[in-house]
Length: 281
Image 1 (cartoon, helix red, strand yellow):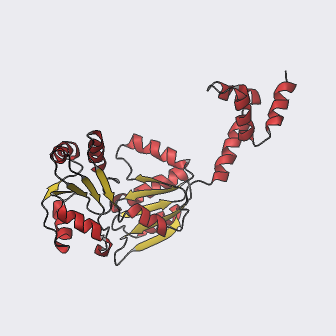
Image 2 (cartoon, rainbow, N blue to C red):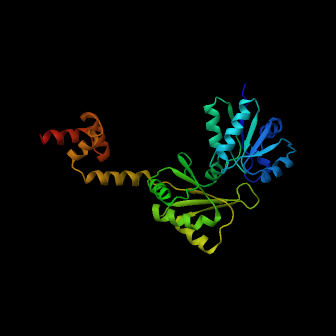
Image 3 (cartoon, rainbow, N blue to C red):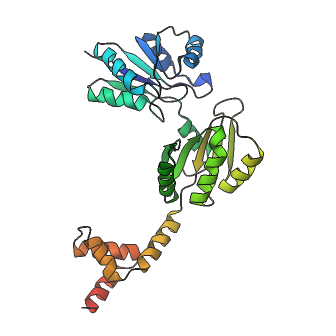
């Protein structure tokens, strides 16, 4: 029988957020795979956990994952931890989880702290619908495409950013999305926790004067649905009804379904579209 991979959430700042279940699991597994063993040893020492550790990080995530999967197939139980928060979120742990699923190895997650959710609840922005972007990619072309997508996003957006990239990222967001409300969170759960609700413009002005320090979670207001619908209606208004119908029929819709969608896009009743089309025949 294979062993089990345990995804163990660790505190993002306050050690009091370590759950008893995670402590017990880290004590009983055969090995702990840690993002940075030098950092994690402090955590383990604090909770008197003496389980052997091995390094698993961004630069060895594929090769080491094969090795860990081999150990799991041989019956060992392994716990995966990151420097802070929940493994596999903006973390190489997702590669190991995928390989375990492919091999039929049991995987379970022990919930705990996650910076993205903590910041969202503190943001004062809508929490009903949200999306997580994490860190922007280094590739400029890929980042440009993501910014283009985010400009149309109506859900609350959550991003991570390092202090030395913060101002540049705020500039790129302001240029792509325009003025939006934003809450910047840092030092979450720690003594000097900071929650800064402002706007993109306000954040830019502030951090051009004050040097950013610490890792940031950015919680950004999505585009209003009303604004999005208005723009869509304006776009459709540039088409004739015949062109609008042809657009949907070209995607495989039958005329009845296309007519219903055209009416919805234009904010009118289906009978009005039907009357126009048949009146022109």
